[in-house]
Length: 462
Image 1 (cartoon, rainbow, N blue to C red):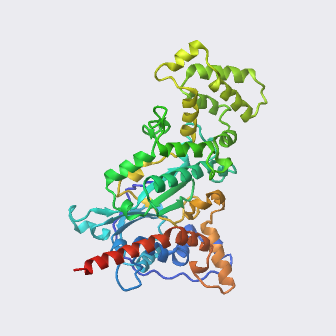
Image 2 (cartoon, rainbow, N blue to C red; image 1 turned 45 degrees about the vertical axis):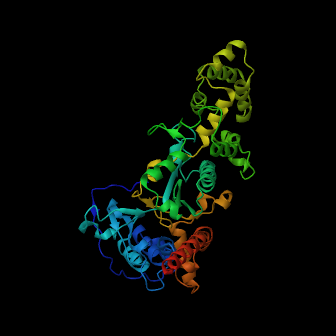
Image 3 (cartoon, rainbow, N blue to C red; image 1 turned 180 degrees about the horizontal axis):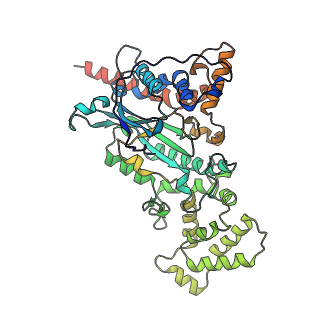
């Protein structure tokens, strides 16, 4: 989400070396305040080297050269008391680390790569300081599923035992969007990241994606978004007109119905209908309104009210289906045949898309200079770490089991007590860093380095 634009704003400054943190005795971390814990995390856990490799795009910095892509990247910090700093930049991973340990940001956002180092922005003209590239990004949050009753009101709180059921909407979103980005646009290098609380971010790092104009970004975002309207209108469909769906939406519809072979049945429409109790008050009224047929709604309500009070969600759904698919008499057929009156097929399709299709914050995607939370930072409210997610193993991801800041420090305590190595190379984040390396970083760096060699070879030909 967009960082808090607080009046207390500081300008960027050169990083200075901060004192390294000493190993803790076991359980000492429990006595520390949040900033003290964060200083240790930034000094001994945060994976600067793999992040630097990513943001350098093929230049690891080990060959004494400086990565222009990295040193011209904007970083933004939100410090304690909502003090907000933009246009930070660093010549190396070590300089970045020093400043993180010194400033102890509660939130880290990353922005575009500019024509010059962002820390020099004050001294440059607008013409000399412009965005050059930035990953295409997506932002999805469960709060956008709550306004119309899709998710029960108390089920987007990560501390609620029902939260894992709500997370299934995120799993569906990743499945649909990952396929669309890969199959429809040909993108290969997608990094999916848990937001630390109740959402997911995607960073598309292909070169084509990074150098898209704002106009192209808007076009891709609009392609992926089937809703229209402002806040509170994220279920007004704009892409389901007529009987013929776009191939991308046909593929999505199969996923929403639980019909494609890669979709877990627990993610199907009927499974979520039972879990979210869409056919119970107060969700029932909103659910029936989505059908767009007031007469049909009244028929269904009358039939449900006459039915047994102990009916299950699936028994009620059979009643609803029966009414939707009921053979029409001549009068109803004429009415349904009028322009704008939905058919049974329309109603079922619209229910699936309105309730389950990903709800994007498309403003995050449309502008190159928009900031987004960095992977591996700590969410200041939940203290959960923003870890990468392998979309191929999405069914095994549990947001309530994501390591917290305290878990990471407890792990350091244990290793310090057993004289283990300090730092993240032997830490609780090992598996998550391995996911980052294997599913995202290695193929990305290999492609970037191959392109650099190809470009170098081209310049040497006469």
